[in-house]
Image (cartoon, rainbow, N blue to C red; front, side):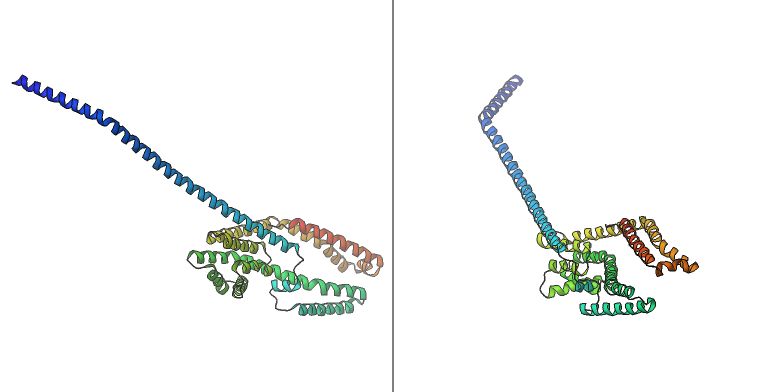
Length: 336
């Protein structure tokens, strides 16, 4: 009985193995074809995914190249405009008075210069009694000194503007990051800023109200504040208007650049202060020595004022001193 059961079981096992082999032999080709089809499907799906990624990358590269080209074209156009502006004549007296923030008109300025020259002429003529010297002093006082005063006021106002301008840019950056548009950020500086930044941004806002765009209004700011930093600001606004981009990041970078330029200027001034002091001492030394000699021995110095040869010597000495002072000034002044 035990042997019969083993034989039956062995026959059943052999039948099962044979049936399984037959089924595998019949279904092998189908299983292999399904595996190959699944592999081809995976490869096609991966290829489509890679093709989509490649296309997206190409689109990004194309978009970046287009944007870079647009920015380059904008920079070239702005540079061309700046070159055309710089190629023109020097700013008129009306523009210089506006840059100095003086309320007088050009005729009033010339009248004031004439009155000042007449006063200097009378004072010099009464003191010296020589007409030629009085006329020379009057010409210098009428034509040179008022213009120098206007230039000094322009430089002082530009310096104040440059000290406050980075702070105004930081306020604009925070305003834009908080969700305010550019126009509202400009109005915020125009209402709550410090002088003279407040006045200049108010002019920008007023220019917008009469029909100018923001880039055009910011571009006109350089007419009243002749600084390269203002030109940088106008270029950033113009590029953002034409090519788009993150304006807050651009203004933040500009603010950092302006602060670094200010630090560099302060460092250069500190390093060149010894040379400036030496130049001042050398330039003032002849005048100081001549004054001391005149106080101790007047008759020794009066020959220069009474003799025509003394006049010639003083004239030549003044010319050479002026040339020396001009050379020393150019040696110790640095543009950054």
